[in-house]
Length: 219
Image 1 (cartoon, helix red, strand yellow):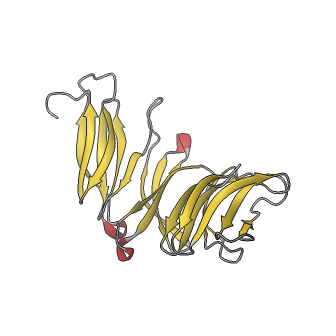
Image 2 (cartoon, rainbow, N blue to C red):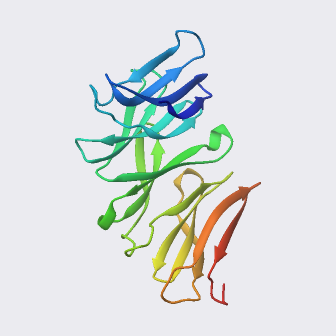
Image 3 (cartoon, one colour):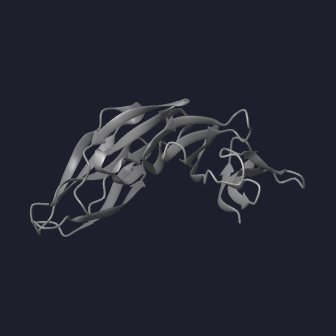
């Protein structure tokens, strides 16, 4: 069954995941012609799946995430829709939980991804060409708390939230080209035993809007 259908605007192709008995679930492409549907590459050769997910269209190709049975984590890949043009960008032994784009114009486009290593912590990375750069790492959140969340790209900046204490959530901003992340606001809960709720981050013409609930009077 086809899933994760994404149009590659650079290649003029539809890229998606599909599963068959010979290859498992892998990445496929279709150019709209009768004979134009084919497997891009069998990243986990044979009937086992590499399970591509989180497809993200770029101006020059496509980013996606696979599950690495050997390394035990997720890997970030790039493809232009060909075997030769499919390359691994970053290998992990953890989970890649988000792939998000910042910018609108081609000269400002950047892709970021979040690597969650469980008890070892969580980190924000930036894709650079066919490599990756660590932007910010955090210690593991307390039990029951999410780590880096609400990752949202705007025209100029990237935003995300992180729980800094049992009752506080920080809103962070990363400027263009991997600038040093900064905290722009800390949301404090009215209940010292629980976190406030912060979500629905939305960029409107370069301004960030969000919802927050359960805050104390100082927020």
